[in-house]
Image 1 (cartoon, rainbow, N blue to C red):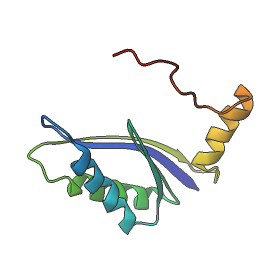
Image 2 (image 1 turned 180 degrees about the vertical axis):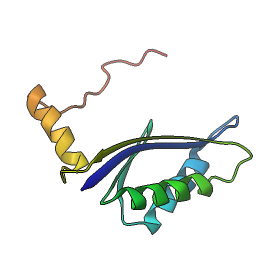
Image 3 (image 1 turned 60 degrees about the vertical axis):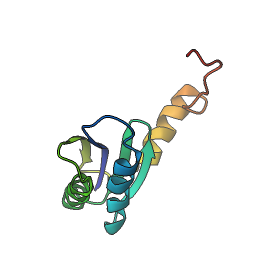
Length: 108
């Protein structure tokens, strides 16, 4: 079984959240999970849902703030061991190209 999730943990505050998010991401290192952080959250992959929940709880608790917002989306594929990377590879095969593109111009 493979469990894939999108986790977003952030303090509710003004200013940069980078240090707090870094604390949440670092907390994942204590668990047997693979992860990749992107601008919208962190994709986590675990062998079982218990490990995933424990890692996500640790990430949530790692943010030292008066108020913390956590969003968790889980894909618990119970009859398969399909990895997160293979899901992306499937989309890229259907696209016939990488599922990524840089912006051609900045509009600020």
